[in-house]
Each structure stands twice: as structure tokens, then as C-alpha cells.
Image 1 (tube, rainbow, N blue to C red):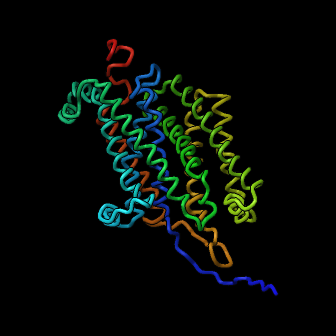
Image 2: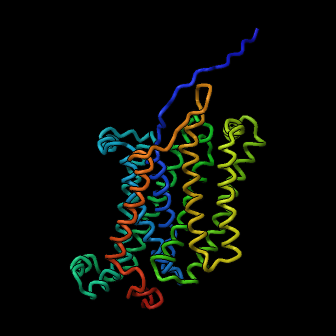
Image 3: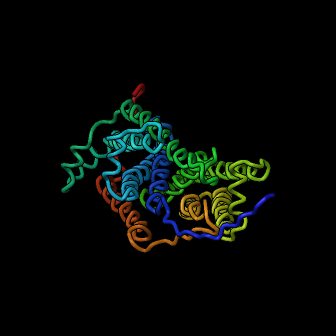
Length: 367
């Protein structure tokens, strides 16, 4: 005799990961994505990549310095972060991240300083109240140092990219998260958002260079193809591999109109900038940049907050509304404001546009 039980209980649950977590994963992804874009031009001195690398470095520094603030806010008190070091549990990916993040942010700051030291020295000659600070930070061009710090930061960035995906993937109780494709989805959408941010920085902060914009648009188109391919693979597994975590995740959200609209929105946010970047790569960087940033943000919001709406137990969906205070909308706006403050500080210290530094083409042979 078989008995069927239908559960009618509904228990309201607060989300384990609030919007602060979305902010952290969004910003740290933008940071390591922008850093990767800076490496060819700044660390390896590839001809034609220098200006792109400078724009990307600015984005990496802004997001890399603000992301830990969002992480500490998500933990509610800094003391909780100290427990990762006082009682280390290296079997946990979250605990490993406590070591990867300082290594990445520290390496990024040193790499940025080494790459910008000639700019600080040149800017010190302009005089003004900031001249002593610029003189202190300035120095000669050291290609070997920049390359060495770039390689160290690259290793740390790969570790951060891996940990941010795996620490969510290991949650077996949520099929939407427990997929081996999640780290790849996070990394691909992070690079997509980083290209979008670099396009905006190149357009509105640095001197608008059409050649740089075209190169960024081509790179964005390639990355968007990668994002679509990973998404298509997820749906293929969900549709044609019964019993897979992807199939169970799709079954959980198949009847939801909200999830259907989210899927359409994300698909459009990937397809539209791809079409614009291919058809008109010059003069549209501000549009494709905003769309790419929106898609990167929406993916994380849908995965984290939307994923926690899916009931693990109970008869109905969990409803999580966006709070208006520091735990919600005000926190998001505050993080954006902090990014603007860091942008103002960095662009005040260093003349990012038109800086009188030594370009790779002018370096002596063997430098």
C-alpha cells in the first residue's frame, strides 16, 4: 500500500545570503575579470594593448578594493572573518577563500602600484598639494617587477575565481547551485561584466579611443558566445540527462512565470550586446557596456536571491523582498557610492588619460 503525502506547511525563512553577498560576488568577479584584461598590455607589454590595460586596471582596483567591504558587511561583523584564521578549516572552500582574497587584493594593489609608478613620477612634476604623495609613490619603469607581480596576482585571481564558484556549487541541497558548470558560469559572466565596465571606463574616464573600443567590442562578442555556450550546455544537460542536478533544477523552476521572465531577460541581455558589438563596434561602447554589466549582475542576483526562493521544504515558494535599509537597497547604493569615491581618489592621484609614461614601443631592447 502506497501513501501519498502533500505538505501544506509554509515557513518563512530569511535568506542565508543577502544582497551584500550578491554585491561581493559581482564586484570580485568584475575585479579579477578586469585584471585579466590588463595583463597583456601592462605585464607582458603587448603592442596596442597598453591603453586597454590601463582602463582595465582602473576597474580592477576599484572593484577589488570595494569587494571586501561588501563581504565583511555580509558577515555582519568583521570578527567573524577573523575566525577563518583563528580556527582554520582548510577543508572548506569558504575558509580557503579567506586566504585567497587577501592574496589577490594585496597582489593587485602591488601590481597596480608597479605598473603606475612612472605615472606617479610624471604627475609629481605637475606640482600641487598631491605632489609629495605622488613623489613618494613614483618610481622608474620596472618591466620585470610588473611582470612578476602580475604572474603572482594572476595565480591568486584564478584561485579566487575557482573558490567563488565552488563554494556555491558544493551546496547539495539546492540543485540550481549544485552543478559543475556553476564556476564556469561565474567566470564567464565575470569576464563579460569586466569588459562592460572597461568599455564604460574607456568611454567616460579615459580618452575615448575608437581602436580600444573596437578591440573591447570584439572581445566582448567572443565572451558573450562563451556565456551563451555554457548556458546552452546547462540546458542540454537539463533536458537530455534525466536525474542530473540540472534536470532537477529545471523541474523546480519550470512552472514559475518569474523564472521564465528572468530567463528571457538574461538571454536578451546576452544577445543584444552581441549583435550591437558585431554590427557597430565603434561608438556603442556605453550601451554594450551597460548591457554586459546588467547581465552579469542579473545572473548573480537570480542565482543567489532567486535560488533561495526555491523551497527546500514546505508547500510554497519563499518570498524574499528587497529591503530598503542597509541590508538591501541602501546597501547596494552605498556600495556603488563607495566605488565612485575610489574612482575619484584614483583618478585624482594619477592622470589616467594622456599620462606621460614610457610606452612599450619606446623601451630599449631587452628592457
